[in-house]
Length: 335
Image 1: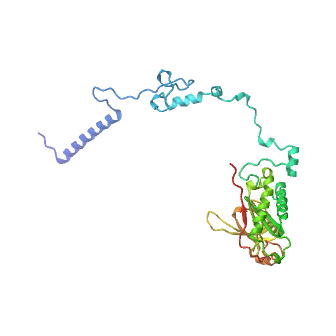
Image 2 (image 1 turned 30 degrees about the horizontal axis):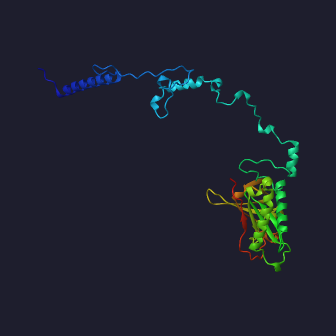
Image 3 (image 1 turned 180 degrees about the vertical axis):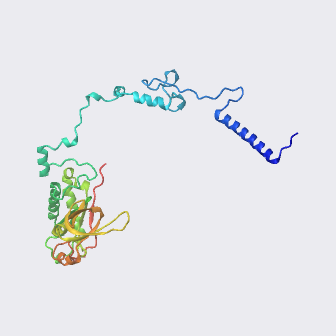
């Protein structure tokens, strides 16, 4: 019997443990089958010709959508090969339209209006169908259909009975048409425009525009607002007449920022006010401001005195006891 020192005994145990660990590791990597049982293997995938579509359930019956087990077993590779093998002839079935008989489509750019249609459009006799988000509301202010509508509005107000009224301004917005009416003689003895006056004017304008609305589509596309001049803050441009009068003048544009909530004021020379944008000249560059971001357009303090020289809506406060607000009318959506 040999006696081993404690250090030699620890070395022997370490070698035995290392050998045992390496043996177990080799068994785990190679794998082994339990006694009296065959090794586990995955079932082979059902292979089908790539040129044939997936068949139904056994017996030639169509698979039941409510029973997933009734569908044939196919691998992702089978499906990919089948899709890649399809051609246009395979997709042409009796239920599809006659592909070969379809006419060739031409780009829209190659289909302009004819000379006769262009003449009718310029004269306002015929208007094309509008599509898109704007629905034609971004047309310029001097478009024939706008001028025709303004003439109808002025005639509708002029034919009213009772105290004579006159249209002093027509303001086109992207979705709103604001008509300003005032006393025809501008006599303070007649008093300010009353709520009954704006109601009469609204009814007359709607009746006249409704007759031509299938062609002009004013009431379908715009909210009509009939109002009196009222009081305007000093230096604020609130009417189309004021915007036209102060073209080329310095203006201050107060804008809104719907994201941050903090707007800014831009300064420049007024170039143009369109139904969708406001154009100003800022140090030689034309800045186009979307109209829905404009809070107000005002004149610098040095020009406020000029604005009070007689342009209504340009800044001069007019004495008016009208506190009823504008009369709005909107057609109900068509169904």
